Figure 1 (cartoon, each protein chain N blue to C red):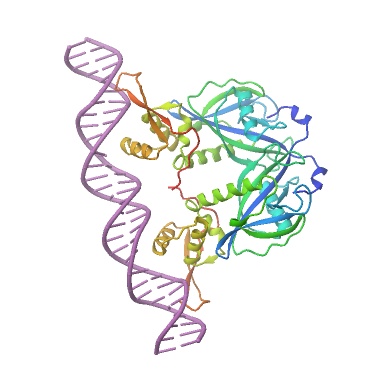
Figure 2 (cartoon, helix red, strand yellow; figure 1 turned 90 degrees about the vertical axis):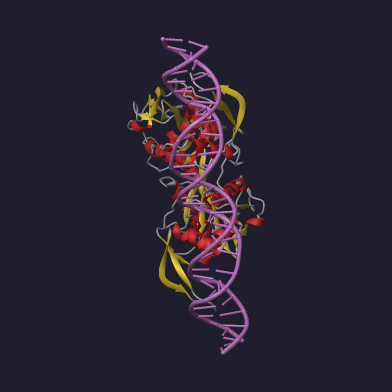
Length: 223
Length: 223
DNA sequence: GCCATATAGTGTAATATTAACACTAATTAA
DNA sequence: TTAATTAGTGTTAATATTACACTATATGGC
């Protein structure tokens, strides 16, 4: 790790790219920006950008997301690092991809390098810049597999939520209907959510109890 | 992603670090090298080094491992990327960590930056350079959790192996004794290994049937 | 006030999976 | 031939998972 020859050529650039999922209108949505600059000007791409000095990797992801779309304080986890030599036509760029989830989708506001920022339905993605289609495919796979051995689904919901809302998250992400009673038994026996004293009473039917996450962190429960 | 200001400061250096596990003498072992150069000269560290131009990330990991320890053609998967600004005292270095597993441990041969390369027992690790202790902790956690939802354990064994040998891998990595009959039922019903026509007949007892992996790739079986 | 509508909330029986457990088989070495 | 050593095999009990239907409680309209 202390070779000297690494000074003899320029280091690759480092970026982060963020795959932000949310749920709205009964479906999984993905945040894309329209690029305002070359390369791939006018193409859709993941939000992201160059690492700054004295900035941690996840800080960079948070900052780029905020700058390009106005979104902040969202759940982030590192997904994978992409570094094929030819993945960026300008110069060598190694990109650390993040998986991000957010509750009720705020309307993003395009800024910085982005001329547009919108939530795209996953069934209907446009052509994508760079290797971003690969990054998104991996993110979907990761999200799906974590659904059943972690508490990641809670990241799609606000601080309090009903069991029906949580079930809907599992159904949308997992693309399958679930049995209400079995779902409730399972999720409550996992110890990751707890009852609150409050009810959601905003509709013309019986109000539902509100629950909250036992801790806001991400819990893995592989047995 | 097309900010211009990123040219106004030098890019961070990029390295790979490789956490190589193997099993020998009934325990899990980890490959460490003794650093021949500053910083941390004389300290133990993970094998790894700087990314070269036109080299993919996993190629870099393979190459560094070969250069520093003589080991090659081993199973590699990306673990996580570490990029805290102060993790390297020389300059900013972002490192992509790899998890690697190998069957019967060849004796490593120190070369390149390494003045020694040996298999360390995990119960008994020395002080480590950089943030390598964190990387190793994460690698152990990943290995343990993948044991039960993937076929990763096969990477510790040669092309053919007996069921007892495979069981021993699970026992060592998982630190728990397993029931022989239950283990055999489970592993054979997963469809990741198949019988060969050969037996291992080298000891003073009944010979054991040899099995092989159905495919050499890594299979995930989250249901 | 009463009824229609809509979602919340609950238990049990059948099925499938996992866990616990002990003996016989085949080889080598003495 | 016998002792030693590991290979290989099935059944039962316990546990976890699945399938399934009705009652409860609010609102809104009449």
